[in-house]
Picture 1 (spheres, one colour):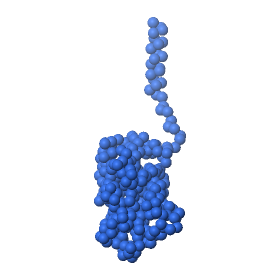
Picture 2: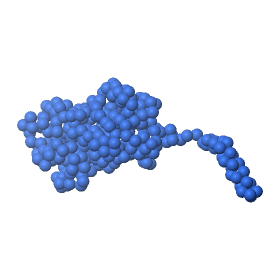
Picture 3: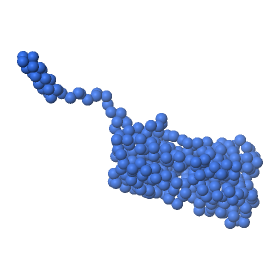
Picture 4: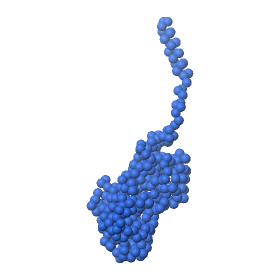
Length: 334
């Protein structure tokens, strides 16, 4: 009986001690940037802000983002800033007011977009940049772009070969506020500078827009009548605009004047099949966007994108008649 009484007393004492014990002290280590993130987030609203809605390249970008995000349980909408930093700022403000858990942004300028990315980040909303980068690291969670330098060297080399490494050409330059424009142009000329018999007669800025490509090409055709052998373009839309101007002038694109594009748009591929466009450089925007969404989802759920670095580049692919049958929507072999 005495043993049973002692056992009951001991058990009661253990219960009392457990009930009165103090909790363990919190770790003295400061929280990391990942632990400060919204880890564990599931679902919620993600704003998709692209450049323009009328361009098939940016349509593919925004629609891929929407499809992939909604498949993961997020709600989305798509808006475009049309390369207007003020409009971009308004769209960022709207996303913040709608309590976005994240923002997918194709930025309106490498310098011009730093402030709005910082604003969203300061508000606790992570920003994921696609297609174009900003001139600062550490505020966006990811910046995924095509390897524009590598792609432009591929396109430039093919263009030079088709020019037989000699003759006069003109250039259509993209939007100067977009880092992709000078990177592509510089990489083209890195190739062309190897061939002293190739001469650029004129360069015109057409801001990635088809109609501007047409207008600027008409100006150059008038200024250098009968002297232009080729057109190197910063993107497909401007290249297609150049083709329209060449045809309007009564010339045959692909025969009288060759034209080289960049992006890998369906319209450009159709022009290659028709013999009007020499080739294009595929930016794997669908693959880039899928990877961005994967990293966004990972960051919201775990506090980490899982990527080794913030800035990431995917290699481009040259599309010419020899491999055109492998083409899918802004992809090859899929």
